[in-house]
Length: 289
Image 1 (cartoon, one colour):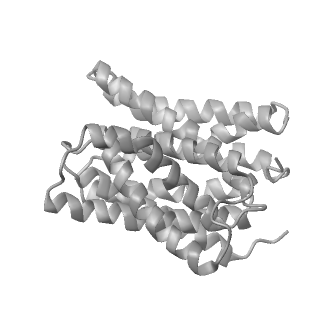
Image 2 (cartoon, one colour):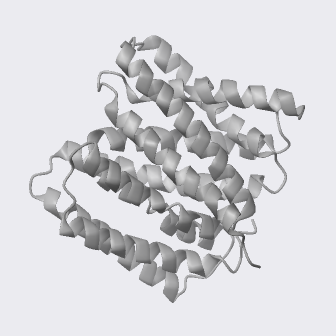
């Protein structure tokens, strides 16, 4: 079936807004804990989404509460990992690692929708991991234990993102997109509130500006993303979302004065090729969970 360009633009906008969110995260003082940033972001999103749901006069709790809660937990874990990696490594590299998640979608499709491991997946895995190893190679000789831990956390973020995508795709068949969006910040607020309360650090005025930016850009990105996943196969959607790597690289160069090396360019191309190959495999099934 031919997909309209207009529907694809939902995911282009999602990638753009999410990339602006990463800039805000990196701009905030490191004294503000990551979990507090995620909490602020979630409160902002929960308020806006709840207002929209009330105006639409729909059931605020949804139908598949169990999967909605799981999606919220996955999103919370993913966001904490993503924010942590953004803060502790170059923006361009953290973005590339995050966007290995389409390959993880292919891996989990083997178990969740009983697909067979085929040549496409094997080639995609090889290209993806080889590309990541090329990107990280310049940092291996000087990287500390902390650096390696950050890379590990970044991959956890990619894995939980892939699982969240599959959950969103399944939920979007029966749930309103704003119900799906609501459960993400709702679960985040509930789980993080005790931690934030016990370890509160008051943000400075400058930090508040960036925190508001996180809320606005993430809400916009989440809305376009969820709408895009509802209208496109998850595999095709994840390929379009790879545009965030381009946006992240641009912001890294222009705002944070990061160096884009030949290793990064070659590695990113290999990861992108792996993503395209892996997602072309599962477009035939459209992730019918």
